[in-house]
Length: 218
Image (cartoon, rainbow, N blue to C red):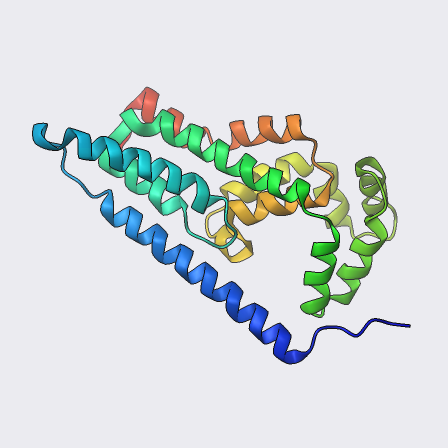
């Protein structure tokens, strides 16, 4: 007997809650960004230090959330404090990406199948259902078989390069942002932890390194 899917009202409610959470998180990101617009003076060093710590924690948490522009906090900190803050932003960025990836690793892949079913992406949902019981290597083999498109096979074969490009692509917020991309990478089960950490560590390094070694400012 087939289990009935969620009703239209249930789907609308879930979408509404999701949008509400994303709007609140986005508002929080903008509030933190504006709060970081401080002038450093001898009498406010403690306040600046607290705001840097608050900004770093908020940056890690918000950047890890899908579709939330947490990167604005990092850019605001770089613009406000210059090259001196670049190493902290780099560490926080890597930590945030790995946090999102780890969350995806612990989520059951059934979650992805349900989301695709709700979005009426039935072919993709069927593919996820077939991949669910397989190991990571078997999932890669399944995606590389002759039934997949050439573009998909190419992206899977060079998946770590594709991951680095996706994370650095301007405007990637429309596909979930860095947090959403890393969440899906972890959920897919085809990205090994060590290789993923190395990929992200290299992918997010150009801007901080340029600021540290060449003194570039935003």
